[in-house]
View (cartoon, rainbow, N blue to C red):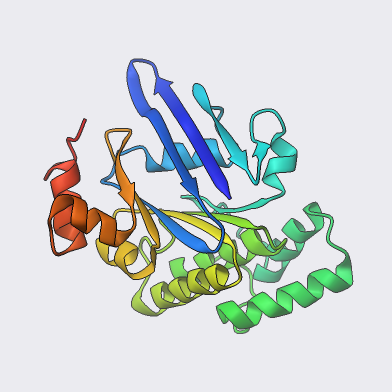
Length: 243
């Protein structure tokens, strides 16, 4: 479970995240939904410890991210907004490297890699160098790398951005698979179809603040709308100007 409380982050005079609070339970997909510039990526970076909050706190399974970052980070897997893959390494070498960093023994690591090769359909590229991979192939490798240590909590920053239809379908199926295993999944998106298809709970953000949150049904009831897209526009405004 992930619990963010009163998160704040300011860059000079610009307030990127303003008193953001939400909880993401196990066995559910929680979506951070908002227009570009709403503070989704900055919030995620504070949650997984890449960026120190200007104020507020983050707990990962009850572990304080600021006070005990290494312990908390062992409990999470992250797909950031940039995959950061090394072009000269193969897909397998990327996953092995991260597994070794997590202290996984060789036999167990090989078993896990075989599992994720099957789940993510990586067999055709697993021993090829990443240089020349499509965007979808790179995303799949980054996903396998992020979850090879079987984290309870998975954070995905716009995981299907720029993917083709088949790659998008594969990522969605993975998210459903992780939810079925009882994991806590948090992902950011500005794509309404994505959120509608996957999310059990939605945190709507606009201008660095949480505008509203709840189940899809609760947001529809709150706004009196019949579609999530209309509910979203009602909450953040047509240009994301909600304050």
